[in-house]
Length: 363
Ligand SMILES: [Fe+2]
Ligand SMILES: [Fe+2]
Image (cartoon, rainbow, N blue to C red; front, top):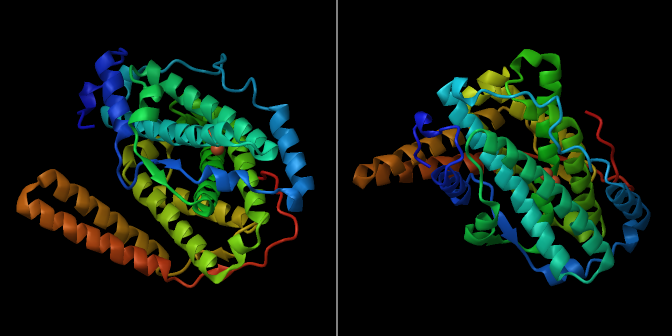
């Protein structure tokens, strides 16, 4: 979306919905994607090897501890969107749209699995997860509506391009995004608990219970991976896990650094925040991932910064257009690719996996 800051009027016009939906529909390497997979293969999973842990998790999901959570209460302070600094408003809306799209993308994938499956264990799990993600996306969309914008979720389901991932890649990518989601929400929540003067919107007050849903979703994918030791044990799959860790972490870094005003308003140093989220995620991921990125390695942060510069150059080139723009874009792409290789080849730390998988959210 090319809207200037002043374009976001606090009235929900059809144009505003169309613009915001277009923003969410855009397929950019950094935007949240929609996924599809081999649902039959997923349906064939036998959870017998993790039965006890599985049943306990599913019982928790069935009990639905967050059933009444995603409703506005007296804690939901009214926000004067007109009075918000225009640059912050643009970045915050971008944050909400991208979060809503990510939540909804989970909902679509999980619902489709539930619809196509016949395995009662798998169908029950994906039904609960789709329920949660629909609530999350709906709640964010409600907040967007108050700003005079909203994402047309029905349209998004049809218009967004779907990326096919083999089931094992879905496990790696989705496990990580659920656990990162947990780490992001809880880190912001704890930060604002300590510095409430930075809480410029009420939605952050909802993050604590919210992130427990994401934590449980991550647990489910950890258990699914545990059913087949090859998924985390073979040499090739370890390389894939390393690839997903590098890709997901570095994408998050680039995306967050594109929102300086948003983080300034939260009183958060982006480098600190991202490293903190990586640290929590890596610690949790020891439950199932045999390798871990060394985020304190001297090449880590410089590599992330070079990748960010590459993306900025690519964007500038795309906006500039013409031969000069294309050249700039190609240079940016080469720089980002070289940075990725440098990050991917940082020696990883290895973990011996525990016998039992389940963890509790402790942050
Ligand atoms: Fe969610
Ligand atoms: Fe989730």
